[in-house]
Length: 330
Image (tube, rainbow, N blue to C red):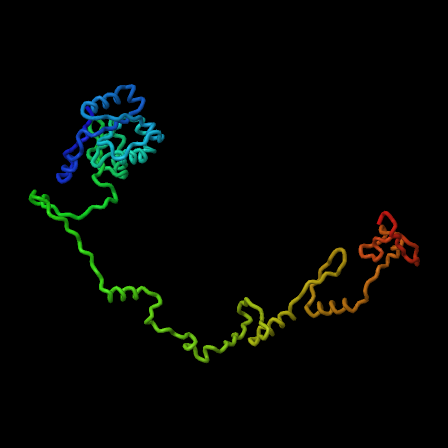
């Protein structure tokens, strides 16, 4: 016979047994099975045993997982799940979702019975604890694991009361309400001023009054004397006074440049900086080069790239070039 809704194992502490015994013995029960357990008769056996003492609601596991059926909250005093071991293994990825539905459907102190388990499901107790259940018994010889829904869900507000029944079993004493501490007006205002960023009692400070005449003078940039052997990462400024400008000018005079002779081979010659300046001055003073081909009048085929007659029609030497704007090829 399947376990009843009220289960008090020997491992439960003495102070918890009164809570377990408060479970309704014949409240509505929910039986959850599968097609396999329905065919082998185990599901019907659980239902028959429960029908003898209470009203039983029957559901298939796949309908709960697919969301086709939603359990009514706080309805069942016990839930009995009967599956095959392979079906329990396939259920593990979605076990937390199922346990959440069952926890909502159970009444306070209602029990959950997982039947037909094997010893391989050692993580089930921890899964039940994370879902909010209290473990009442571990795996029994029949492969049953029983858990219970707590009497109060997480976040429930409880009033603080003292009952004389906890001491001598007599009548209940009145509830003890803790008095609220009241702050006087002076302490309340001082506490408020403590966290105020701009307190009226704080004097203002003029920032300009803190500066002296020396602080307001513009600083003069002073460079240290340049060291020729040390690495340099900057150029001389406009009014250089540290000697860096003279050092750069001296290095420029001693440096050499590469000059191309302008021929087709492009031969390069290394000359001093002064020779470079002389060559530049000589090139500026030289007369402008003119073309010596003498064949510009024959047409574009005989003209160089810089010819002033490029694009004009052929003409006779000494003849004035005239362009007919009525020509179609223009």
